[in-house]
Amino acid sequence: MKITHHGGHTGVTGSCHELHYADSRSVLIDCGMFQGQDARGRSGMEIDFPISDVQALILTHVHIDHIGRIPYLFDAGFNKPIYCTKPTAKLLPIMMEDAMRLGITRNRRVIKEFMDELKRLIRPIPYGKWTNLQTGKSHGEAPDASSKQLEFRFQQAGHILGSSYVETQCGDERYVFSGDLGSRCTPILNDPISPERADVLVLESTYGDRIHEGRETRLHRLESILCETMQNKGVTIIPAFSLGRTQELLYEMNLIMEEIGHKTQCTLLKQIDVIIDSPLALKLTDIYEQMREFWDEEAHEVLTIDKLPLVFKNLVEIDRGAEHHQTINYLLKSGKPAIVIAGSGMCTGGRVVDYLKAFLGRENTDVVFVGFQGTGTLGREIQKCEGGKGKVWIDHQEFEVKAKTYTLHGYSAHADQSDLLRFVQEIPNKPKEIRLVHGEANAKAALAEKLKSLDYNVT
Image 1 (cartoon, rainbow, N blue to C red):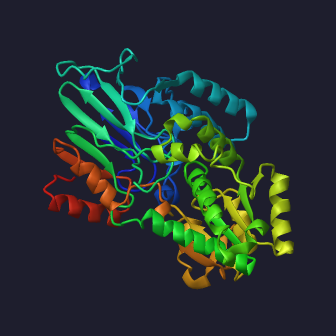
Image 2: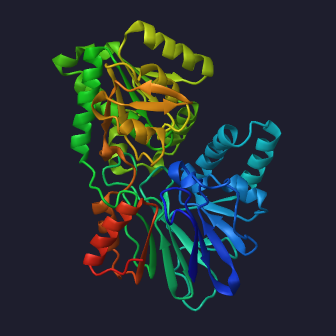
Image 3: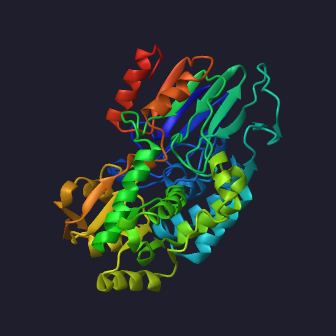
């Protein structure tokens, strides 16, 4: 087998890897959109490689940088099966319809045709079951080392609901694609368990140069920021990805709210609103609630006490566009403290941009980043304005940043350097080759250095 990278190899976004196996046949592992700096210098998102040999698309999860080029793949003539986990099969149509409407076309007929074709091609596969690509049938037996047919299986990645890493085998060769691995600090979902072997490991490196703060630290920091919001009657804006980060924040805010309620210095609790302003996030939160069977042990313990751990009394859900603008106007006039969670996570679009325009110039505003901010994104530019000083451009207009900015790395859904090293070191049979993808140059270099010091072959 061999791999051709069509995205995500020299940058962070646009993940798309073609695995070539017997008789020139191949499969695609993800087909993601380029974002931020990765998108610069590209004429478009069109598929610029031949797909005549591609037998299937195998998806690790539904973040846009792993699925965003599927419409262009269809335009190029792709009509083969799309394999994914059962939760991903539930989430994929919602994510793709939103991506089509916001980024490609608002033509309802075109969107419907695409959605009909997408749903026709989706093939949900359970975790931990080997699937024969030729027959599409799943089984629990190890692949036949003498066979020239490709087999694959999904394993828990702990990144977002439905996320997986993918083990592939043809003959006696086994290649593993990590997708995006989750942090051990991520609530709700199970942690990833390393594969038993990998001749070649294609490993993400987003945070290959960093160690996340622990869960207790990040909870304490978030609690302090929320208390300050209540005391100074300000607005805390949290740009969050609709899938994964929003649900984690709701889960942990529920815990924090209960704790704050017992502290006298935070008696303003009942006077603060927690606003979720994202129709997509609301839909996805419902899916999270429906698929509790995929939650981890801690989350199931919480369920014995709190039947709705993603919902609490202070929560205000904003769906319609008119409500969105009314809410901003209300917060501007009322002086009432509020916490706003809105997409997009890198501030590249979506409703969070309107909140930033309205409140960045206020000293009692806090902007809290809880996820990776790609180079060239508005989120990265605001992140640079530490201490409430600086200026950014939004929609061709300059805005002064008086708001305080915070970055809580502990809320990243990506594994940090220690998580990545642990994932590799717990593979019983050392990989013959580790290929680093999905990371900026400094992150890859730092992780490569660590791995090489442990006597791994890194390319």
